[in-house]
Image 1: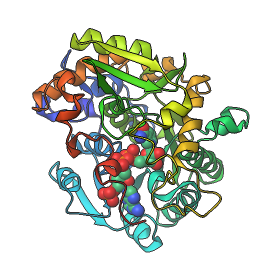
Image 2: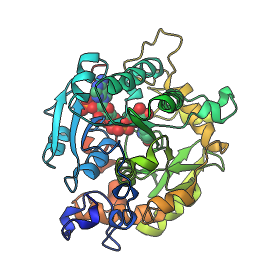
Image 3: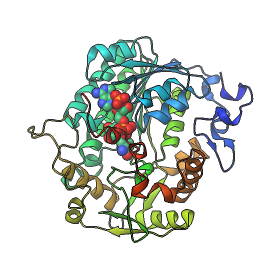
Length: 405
Ligand SMILES: NC(=O)c1ccc[n+]([C@@H]2O[C@H](COP(=O)([O-])OP(=O)(O)OC[C@H]3O[C@@H](n4cnc5c(N)ncnc54)[C@H](OP(=O)(O)O)[C@@H]3O)[C@@H](O)[C@H]2O)c1
């Protein structure tokens, strides 16, 4: 059924993030205007989707987008069905929970069974790169065996390859996914009639620039919101989480086009000088970007304690394959500083005409949404004295990087 044929929708319907508060228009309705699968029924239309990572920063808007109009039912894997995030998903309706870990074949099998779709975002900050590689492969293999019809792999850019295999850009939590995305698409060349597959390549969440416990958490210095990061004149293609929900939903809605696709998304490539200027413009309060060399960055009070720990909190620190936070995020910042990653913004405009296109637009929207949710203004929200664990956008940070593999 095409979403256009659904009854008129009220404001509360659109938890998809497809309605823009500033226009009150639902972009999903617009982009789905001529769904080609309604003319050529694809073998890969799905209705029950198994989601790994559903309680996470990325997974929450993805699940919201999938169930917003009850087109899809979602089974979310979580290690703790009683967590507030898991319960918030259940409250959406059309969401069930499966308790367990992705690092267990029986659990994966139970998750995929009875589902015809899958969205798999394996948490590399839990596993580390090596273990993520194994479970990404097994997730794909078990999905196909259990009869899943469309598999969407939550991905990040294969930075090392895109840099021409230059170790300055080696970023374990990117490369670990990026390699597997290529592997998934390679398998899909043979398997796509049995199970279609798409890759969803996102990037650093813009929500992290106003959140505690991230690589770009701001400080407030003499009343000036300050980002001290080793970015030089580079630019970060931040992504907006709500738009991630839209894009993943689009992949499931358009299997005939999505099959074999690597959908690489972002708001825009934003320099932090421009990002700070946008923050200033929206909030009316001063903000600045200070280019910081890597040594100073790693010696900052927030990072010095964690710099030499494994990037993945359950990765073996004695395994030579394990990257430290310092090595992992040094590569990460080099990637943005040297412009290694590109995006096709024209394609994104076509797929999501009402997508968020600038830092300023995101700040404006987030300021409004935050006030409506009682979180206060954007300015209030970056004051460290106002931070609680609810302020951390990443669940793993809110959980203090603990939890089982
Ligand atoms: N930070 C970014 O900007 C960014 C951007 C794009 C992609 N990523 C990637 O996304 C992944 C993390 O997802 P996120 O960003 O949404 O982080 P997050 O907010 O910390 O969420 C982590 C998610 O992974 C789940 N999880 C962790 N270990 C699990 C296990 N053993 N079994 C089952 N589920 C498990 C958690 O579920 P429970 O705790 O409920 O079990 C939660 O849903 C990482 O691989 C990261 O590299 C990050």
